[in-house]
Amino acid sequence: DAMVIQNPRYQVTQFGKPVTLSCSQTLNHNVMYWYQQKSSQAPKLLFHYYDKDFNNEADTPDNFQSRRPNTSFCFLDIRSPGLGDAAMYLCATSRDRQNRGGPQHFGDGTRLSIL
Amino acid sequence: GDSVTQMEGPVTLSEEAFLTINCTYTATGYPSLFWYVQYPGEGLQLLLKATKADDKGSNKGFEATYRKETTSFHLEKGSVQVSDSAVYFCALSPSGGYQKVTFGIGTKLQVIP
Image 1: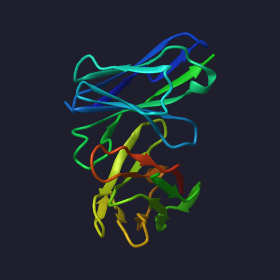
Image 2 (image 1 turned 90 degrees about the vertical axis):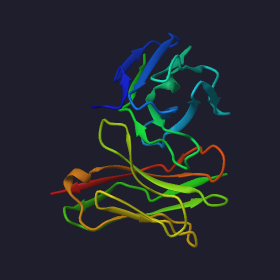
Image 3 (image 1 turned 90 degrees about the horizontal axis):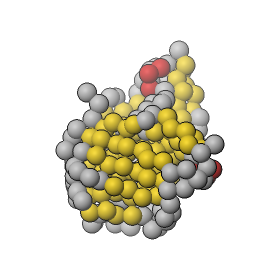
Image 4 (image 1 turned 120 degrees about the vertical axis):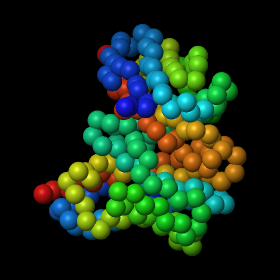
């Protein structure tokens, strides 16, 4: 009964080769988030969608983009991955960003390795 | 800007020991405060939260009280189990408007039998 599903769990790509990570949710939540988490560090918010409204964090590199074709799915695209982009990528959801709550449900993450 | 400071880990405890993980924050106004837990190989789970001063969040035997006067939100549990071994993240969400959550660095807890 997983509610936020990330695929794949492990992804290996080559330096500079575009890669897409996917996230789906069965909660019908309005907000979907993408976080980057490097080893022994706090998760760092890259961007979020409130419904179809895309919100990019100021310090998110242009190399990172996202798509949300419908309520259930959200994708993270890394156009030209560098070695510094190797990390765990976490997708999360919340019902509404105005509820004074943070992300409520996380997926298990995709661990990205760059060769 | 907003920040969260957690005690450095790892913290190693024997089963049934008392747990405290310290967390202090810097933020304007009245942020919401959270504890998340991350078990090995998994994503984060929201463990508990508090949205105003003196609120106590609790879940699965864990508790934390929102202390505005000391800007703290320490996590406690009276008797830890091996299954509590995980990384615990303190986090805040600023008051008003869209809330971007700021996480602490995380504290790894290892409970030994």
